[in-house]
Length: 112
Image (tube, rainbow, N blue to C red; front, top):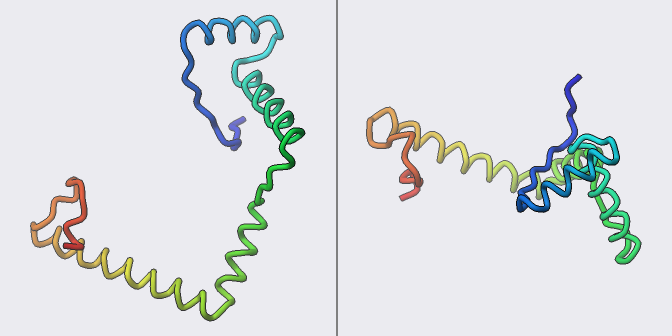
């Protein structure tokens, strides 16, 4: 069954990685599960010393965005931003179709 949990990639020196594998084997945990346990433990200890870290849930973010859209002033800012984005996209598309801009190129000559 696939997991939809966020993923974290860590780069370690070989010595630390070998020690980490040893701990995983000794504790009978996969590297992934052990990594999650270690991160959760560190965050818990951090919060005990520094206070709880505020985290917005998906529901909180959704409600903020809905309220922002309902606010007429914010709504106008969003619409203006979208219009600018569409204008930029239209201009870039025309340049690509006319052969003036290679879509693989770095940079944005459409704004120059």
